[in-house]
Length: 264
Image 1 (cartoon, helix red, strand yellow):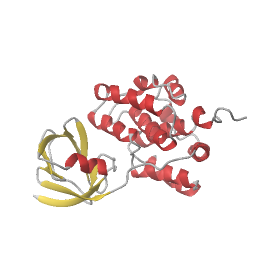
Image 2: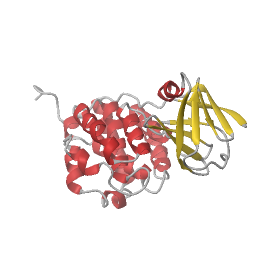
Image 3: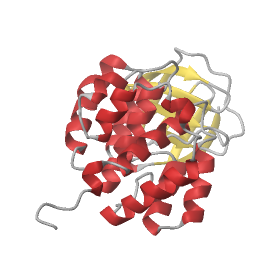
């Protein structure tokens, strides 16, 4: 049995703390093991894995050979897999910063300018009507996007994740409605991993690269934004680009750009 330490968000620590519980392995890769614990997906992440906010980060170059369906034990801040025990000893911040209206507007312009046409491929895979509705803050767009596309994190879910996390950051007026629609339907319409990532995004949690993007927007630092965009575009086949599309839709939302009632 190999024992290592790892870092995770407060939310993940809360999930793995407490009495002994059993889960099962959902999916295995060279750099990540995803497990189901009471209907929520948690992950043990190697050094080269995408650092999802529902995961425990380790410096392991590879993970042990573990089969899907294997039993997992969670207890007192640790995750025990066949041949591997990971103890959460460090807390990492996965939350996005707060963006003011002017800052969000700056971010929308700069992100759009820097991305040019690099989101065209993913945009073409998403119904235009759904994106237009999401841009207006219409919660009806959720059912058009949830579960849209193949894989553990369908493209439509990636778009919603980017929108939700950015909406939390910008205090988007439609956040409550869209978040409620996602929460009501995600478990039935998408994968356990994707539903968990959507829940994380609804709290304003995202990938480190995504957080860096919004930190750069908050600082109005074009260089930081550009670096974060490049890193996000390298995440998965379409996951990073999907998150960026959702973020851009949120940043360019008419309800964020419109002046407050009573202004001339």
